Image 1: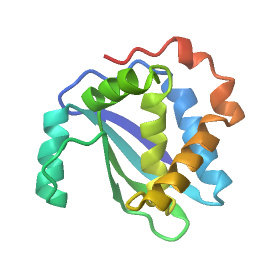
Image 2: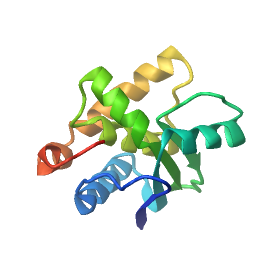
Image 3: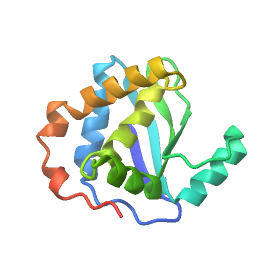
Image 4: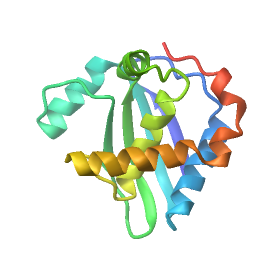
Length: 150
């Protein structure tokens, strides 16, 4: 199992990474899968916009892009997260203490087979995110008061 965190052109968000890895692993295991190699890359809006244009032919900002390399029951891939977009969404939706975690788990949920293209799929995805954010490992960790999202 390898869950890794990198930064492309921003500072790494200040969260408790050991607890975060355990929570991600628990989410994967509740879906009866195993963690392979999951790499997170925190970046800026412009960095992710360039990726969105280059790889997905989309010309708009987004908070997360997932490249799924899952094989069988081993969840693997790369998840790129715009900390700029996360910070803006956190302010817009008054989710300052949870937005980064929602986006982090959103990418994993894509690797687990969840979609978000249609309104129905978005509803299912949001419910899955909410279940993950309500898991004891998430709720019982004191990282919420320690997080700083720029």
